[in-house]
Image 1: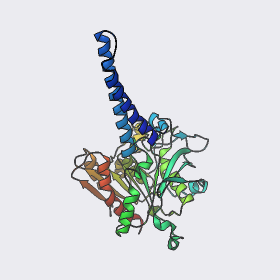
Image 2: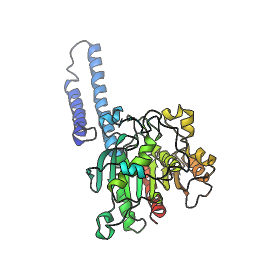
Image 3: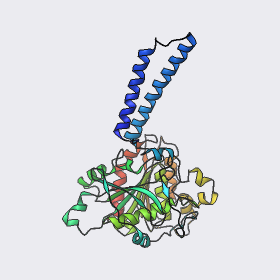
Image 4: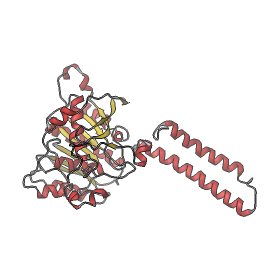
Length: 373
């Protein structure tokens, strides 16, 4: 039974009802001495409370994320990686700032995929990255213009979307409703058509953060997100092959990853939006390796770079979300030639989906201005 499916949610409701009805029915019928009856009543109360908590957690997961898409994702055994000879599985501490050339080799090696419908206008599939050998999910939305005759020979700009941790890629088309917001902005003439794609970010599942880095001897997450996902999209859709028409946007941990990957792979992304992100790696598996942590700190990479990459950044934070505004200002301030880069500051709002949704319209308009010219 699916973790996010309606049958499981209905089952949790039934468990709550059954627990309450059972408690009422036998509350005064428990046999035995007072201590036994007291213990039985405490047990029934705890059982009914546990059932209620489970129902609420399932509802929150389904309506505000999903944060966990499957049982395997929840317990950390959903992602798979194939470490084969010659694919860089030994890993490296990070990419060279200003390096990261084009993805021609990855695109040539990428497979043609079969997509199914996730929700109206959104396609889904699973794919293996040609370079990282990571198997992950892809969710793709193409604008209405994609299927219109006058755009039959148009290659569209692309925005890659990253969730937080825990989080799933489809949250961008569920709770965040990024495609719905972009359609509204296009109808108002504030944004131009762009392909939206969201991919698996969290390799370990269970809320454990792999830090979107290339982990030595393990998941090559940076390669998957910055090389493989663009290659797979280019192979299967009319997507632009020009890095200046590619952007990446994320919230929380995904915001940090967006900035980090753009700094390291300007040959893949020209623009990045970080919503309530941070500048230094936060994943324990990255922090325990000082060299890896230093190589995945976008603020320090920019500060130390002799020649900074040709990128633009929008960094957003809320004054009620500690650290996000100072980090946003520091990151944009580290750019020697900021150009249209900017900081977005909200007066109110904690580290919540509602805040990220508030940041979304301005972020999409800004991205359209950077990559659709």
